[in-house]
Image 1 (cartoon, rainbow, N blue to C red):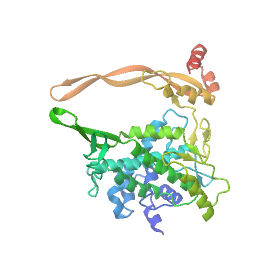
Image 2 (cartoon, helix red, strand yellow; image 1 turned 120 degrees about the vertical axis):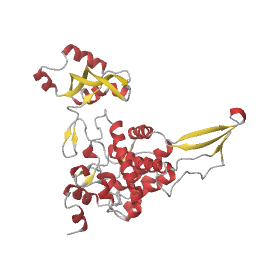
Image 3 (tube, rainbow, N blue to C red; image 1 turned 180 degrees about the horizontal axis):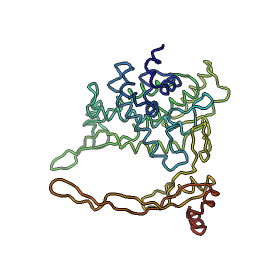
Amino acid sequence: MTKDEQIFGKCPKVHQFWIMLNIGPHLRILFLLPVLQFSQSWSVNNFLMTGPKAYLIYSSSVAAGAQSGIEECKYQFAWDRWNCPERTLQLSSHGGLRSANRETAFVHAISSAGVMYTLTRNCSLGDFDNCGCDDSRNGQLGGQGWLWGGCSDNVGFGEAISKQFVDGLETGQDARAAMNLHNNEAGRKAVKSTMKRTCKCHGVSGSCTTQTCWLQLPEFREVGYYLKEKYHKALKVDLLQGVGNSAASRGAIAETFSSISKKELVHLEDSPDYCLENKTLGLLGTEGRECLKRGKTLSKWEKRSCKRLCGDCGLAVEERRADMVSSCNCKFHWCCAVKCEQCRKSVTKYFCVKKEKRERSGGGISRKKETKLKKKM
């Protein structure tokens, strides 16, 4: 019995995925998080204890960072046809090969960014003894009227450790591995590009004669927005046809990717039709998805979600009424309790359904309302 078989004897699904990735034990955590749910007897901490002890001080941050990347992916694509489904996050494979479309590119970039961001933040919080402020430029002139100073977030540290963990997932030397490494780097560049300069004024009586400034991490949401823009502008690289794993092929691949900015996302394949269910690729299609129609705080993208998810996919929009119960009229009572009433309100939600299904059920919106809805979409 091998060491892996001894470790995963009670968790065959995790073992199967471990073999599929074929990567080192201290790196597998990045894309195993969703898989670990298959076994209650297997925890993240148990898993990390199988790796080199030198990595254990960073392991919790790496795991949390990867998870934050997944959550941000779900937020950014909540109202898109592809909505970052769990089953596609473990580097989906088709015919023995991992996907290489623009969605895969985003997953790599946001995961890499999440790991780097969390490592950097935890460094600033003092969670690591071997990491502190980045004061390498303190005292230097930064611009007109200001100097570098204060305590900058140490993104150099986060970048270096993240690179060891995330890039270590790629053991191949083919075009797909090169694409993944490029997008990993784009994720790290996104964190650095969204850093915020914060300054403090110095001078007599509160004047701002000079300023000292330092760099701070933004909210991770800003990194997500930044990478979503890169996703829409992702570059397609045509390298799959006729490219093998010879030294000459690897040289051609390296030369191609070196000519592309490290800040840009790249992909090798076109995306599938996300309107349709595809069990092989783990895609559920848009039938049954909720969409948004009204709301003062909705963006234009969200307001058009019914057209994008339903109408453009050949589906009808079904209106459903639902009762929601929530706490309301809360009052503080001395001492020390808060008592609330339970308020019920009716809300309207919209879902994508097959046209014939809605017609058979006789439910949903009337033809008159449907005509108005189509005009608004």
